[in-house]
Structures are given as structure tokens and as C-alpha cells.
Amino acid sequence: MTNTDILLEDLEDVLDDASSIPLSKKCAVDVDKIKTIIEDIRLNTPQETKQAKAIVDSRNTILEEAKREAADIIKKAQEEARELVARDEITKTAQAEATEILAQANEQGKQFIQESQNQASEILNNATAQANEMVTSAQNKSREMLTAVNNYADDTLLSIDDALYKALTDVRRIRDGISNAQRKG
Image (cartoon, rainbow, N blue to C red; front, side, top):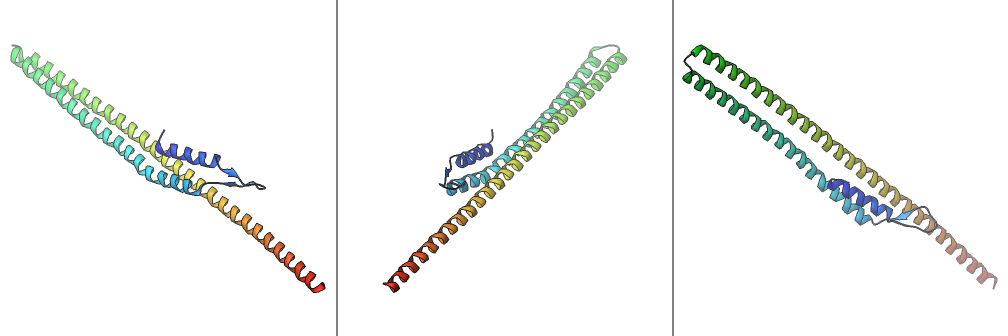
């Protein structure tokens, strides 16, 4: 599980722990906690990008190792071919065997390099896709949470505005009643 996933779960926990406002469907959340978690998500996104880069670097290391191993195989094959020629009195047979060994070694080296490149490309593609999915998911979750927080703040302000308006109306009505009572009395 990535740091971003953990932070998103923390954000969901903050929303789940929100206390409800009496006589409404609204909840009070700790806006500072939500802002802190969103900031942490933003800070962790580059970390996940670094992890994807490490995978790319690993791919390059695998390719270099494959090239070195292929060169070693070719070198050993050439040495074996030379030894066969030097030891054997039948030079043609030794040369044919050496050529065959060298060709096989070259073919094996090419296959090994190709397989390593394919494997490294697959790892890179998977890692890139996974990193992109994680970043997209984190961005979407972050946008959703920000929208929810903004909507909640707007609803809370409207509710407060309505309550203040009602209270002000009640105060004016009471004041008018007192004024009317004083005029009569």
C-alpha cells in the first residue's frame, strides 16, 4: 500500500469521524486535518514518481548485466574455439566446431539480451501504468475531497446565514413589540 493510499484512508477516517450538526444533515469536520492530509498527498506524489524512476534504473541495470553476460559468453566461446584449433590436428574440424560454438554463443547472447530487454520493458510498462494509475487515483480522490469540503463549507455558511437572519428577524419583532407596548402604556 502506498503512502498516498494511506493518506487517502486517513482523509476518509476524518470524514467518518465528523460529528453531525444537530437538526441538519451536515457534519463538522476538522478542516485543518483535511488540509494537512491533502498537502501530504501532494508531497508524496513525487515520492511515487521516484519509485517509478528507480524501476527504470533497475531496467537499465538488467540490460547492462545482460550485455556483459552476452559478451562473457561470446568471449568464452571464442576462447574455446581457439583452444580446439590449437589442440586438434584436424584444423578444419576444429574450425567448424569453433564456428558453430561461436554462432551458438552469439545466438544465445542475442536471445538473452532480447529476453532481458523484453522483461525490462514489461516491468517498466507495468510500473509506469501502475504509477500513472496511483497518481490519477490520488488526484481524483484529492479533487473529490476538496469538492466535498468546499460543499460542506458552503452549506455550513448558508445554514449560519439562515440562522442569523431568523435571529435578527426575531429581535426586530421583539423590539417592535416592546416599542408598541411602550406607546400604548
